[in-house]
Length: 105
Image 1 (cartoon, rainbow, N blue to C red):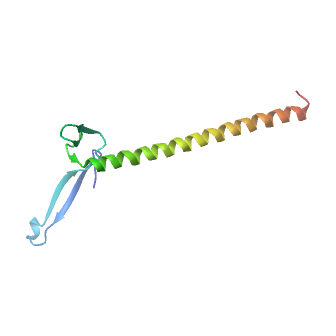
Image 2 (cartoon, rainbow, N blue to C red):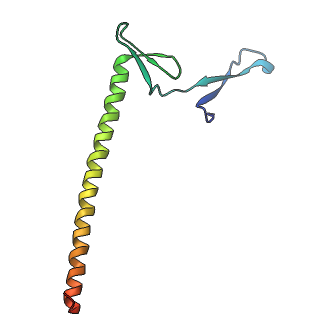
Image 3 (tube, rainbow, N blue to C red):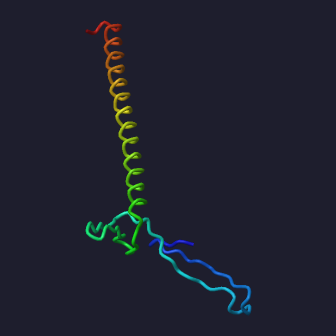
């Protein structure tokens, strides 16, 4: 179960213990490690939210995947803008044709 702050409650079971102490609840913090601090001298990457020391290559991959996704969205948006502009021109031509057909220049 995860709450609004991203904390997860984990239920652990140890069946070797007596029944009244068999289950324990442990809260863990889930972090996506998005805002990072880079220490160029120590060559480390640290999450600014939870303080975890991260694998620099994993962070690089995460950034690259994010940029690839953004580029895909940008291409998609550009294609949609072109389509909208084409539809606007088509509407304009249709209105002009309608005016001509009705005898209004």
